[in-house]
Length: 174
Image 1 (tube, rainbow, N blue to C red):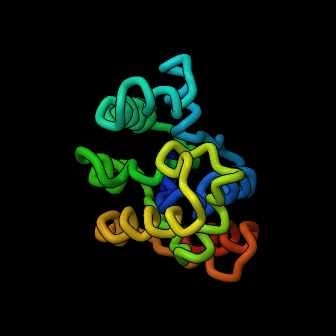
Image 2: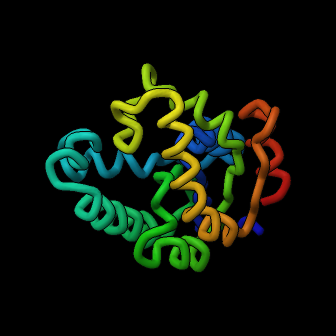
């Protein structure tokens, strides 16, 4: 499935391991790793949490789509960790599927809730939430995002796997 010049897009809910797996995969493939959130921070000159707080989610999603489009237009091989909502807005998923390879890192709600624990999370969508509220927020987001995620070209369960094992499995499926 992997073709020269095509980016690999990792999609999934916050905490699914997109950044960790992405870095490992990029090392294995010898191609650059890019975190879409880092590109947004560079473009905006401020933290994503600040963009959310001051401009709102609609503005953030427009900036996110523009940054994604510029990554796709660059036409070079790379591993891209997207934001959890990236494939669910505008026609982002269609663009990623058309011009790259998409991989959904499927992770259970319980595991996701543990990974985005309020004390450790800087994620704007979970800011100020207690443990049970994190689970509720994940379930709500998951329920409407899942149909998008399931359109990925590759789906890999991360359940009871180390990030290195997920990266190796993804490499084998590419």
